[in-house]
Every structure is written in C-alpha cells, then in structure tokens.
Image (cartoon, rainbow, N blue to C red; front, side):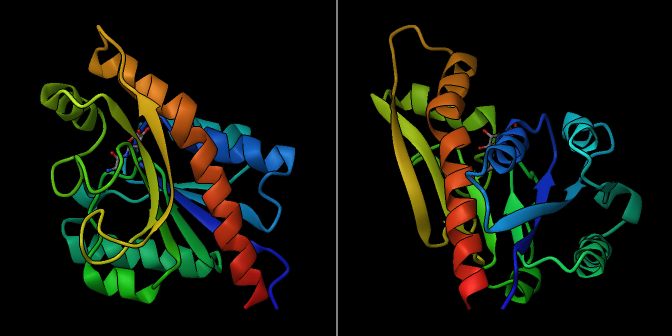
Length: 202
Ligand code: GAR
C-alpha cells in the first residue's frame, strides 16, 4: 500500500490551477497525495515560478526542442518514471497526449476543462477559446469539468462538474476568471484528493 500518491502536475501557462493544488495541499484538502513534480511544456510558463516558490521540482519538456511527439512523450515518461509518479494532473496543459502515453497511465490522468462537458470541448477548445464559444452560442450556464483522460480529447469519465452562471456583459476574460474562481480551483483539488485516496487504497 502506498503512503501517499505521488502526483505530477503538467502545465503550459499561468498555473493558477497548479496554485490551487499547492494551496490545497498546504491546507490539508489534499492529504492522500503529494505534488512531487511539475512538468511544463513551455520554458517561460509562470507555473514554473509557482512550483519553485512551493519547493517543488519543475522541469521543462518542449516538443519544439525535442522535434517530435514521440521524443516529447518519451521524455515526459522518463521524468514521470524518475519521480515514481502515480497520478498525473493536467492543469492547463496544452498538448494532446497519444493513446500509448495514456495507456501507460490508464485511469491515472486527470484533466480540468473550463466548460460543462460535452459542451465546448474536444479538439481546438482550450483556454479562452472555450469561453468565447460559450458566449458566442449564448448559453446562460457554463462551468468546469474534471475528468479522467482517455484517447478521446475531453472524452474520459467525468469525476466532478460544477455549473457557473453567465452574466450580462461578460467578456471571455471575465467569464474565464469566474469559472476558475467558482469551479476549477475547487473541483481540481477535490478530484485530485478523491483519486489519490482511491489509489492508496488499491
Ligand atoms: C484553465 O482554465 C484550464 O481549465 C484550461 O486552461 C486554463 C489554464 O489556466 N484548460 C483547457 O482549456 C484544457 N482543454 P492555468 O494555467 O491558470 O491553470
């Protein structure tokens, strides 16, 4: 039996969801797992600063530098192995992972998506684009989803969802912030604890 699930958080940008995970670990909301590694697909991601401030190892794995998806994924896998990772959390990670990568961590990869799946999700729907699409469509309610990652983009089993109201005069930026504050930053730590707890019971 594992004492705590060893968690890797994969990021590409600002890392506010990573920060929510770090804060949840500090406050004890996450207690069945520990964030052991942050992997960033971008060298200049602010998320790496957040990792450093929290004393968590942060490493860059750049597809551009490595030259191919295969080389990118084998470097990711090598680091995950080196750090003995049990659970992967995608927190604003903007690269699609192949089926063989996902199979290596079946039911051990979580993703947070800023809409109520199955709306505004799948290929091409990431970051602000998701909120632009929700506003363009004119839906009155959106939200966030945490789900397991499978071979279908945003298609894996849903773990948690929370609805967030759209208000008049919302811009994509305003809506993104509300969805983060009211949904993503709460759901991702909660789901991470739930899955970590189930892994250490295995
Ligand atoms: C978050 O809103 C996350 O849900 C979204 O990117 C943002 C990253 O922000 N992810 C996707 O759109 C994945 N399809 P962060 O770097 O501040 O956590």
